[in-house]
Length: 344
Image (tube, rainbow, N blue to C red; front, side, top):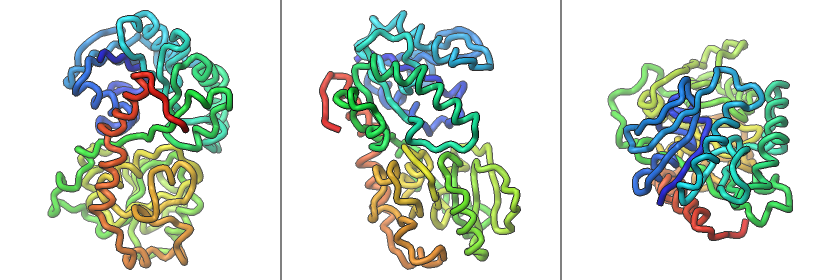
């Protein structure tokens, strides 16, 4: 099958790593299909990357005033779409100029689902909704949502073409068997928290304060002005270093205010780690009582009690492979590509 993907996130321009993020769906599709991806770059170009993916970049300036990069990606997509069997916009952002009823689109956020506190984020998400997302809903052939709370947020008149398809994880890379048992970090033992999106920092602070003997390692959260003595902050790590941090962590802690799909939860699952997190919509699409510890089930915020909860690491990893590996997720998308529907 010839598949055209559109995305404003790719390895040349994304905050996602090479082995993380929704772009990994493209890599999986390229294993057995002829795949082209349109994104943006410093110059207009066309090349074949190391995975055999034909990458087309539209020239875009550093600033993205009124979604100019996303509009240019969709415009290029419209120009060449007729040469492909399937057009899939990996994000709702890159659909504006595509022909009506000609593409599959994936939604990752909606204003009524995410709860941003910074005014710039709130302005951005609402502008995106009214300029790009509403149009994507009207003109798409199929809408995929990475969580059921996003499905609930899609207006009723578009529900018939909407379905829940989970986010995936690269279970081949996020694999504990690839880690060196002896190459442990200097801080040991420790609890790990990765990423700040949707994080309940107030609740996280409570865990820090009530567990002074526990060491925490936070990746990508920025420095905390409270300067806790039992917290180490890290950023800009290689994928291999992050994988090693997951492997050697006692557990992963992710208290959340909101969620749709969460890369760090999926990565931790793939590494077979015990995860302590919030029982909220967007999390329960991925985790259950057999694969994590929900905070509302804990008697207190004392993390020493987690040691007595025996979760099976092999079961957690197997659950991730069986339900969220990119091969499994691509199979669900092929139902969309082939025009088959499934009730939401």
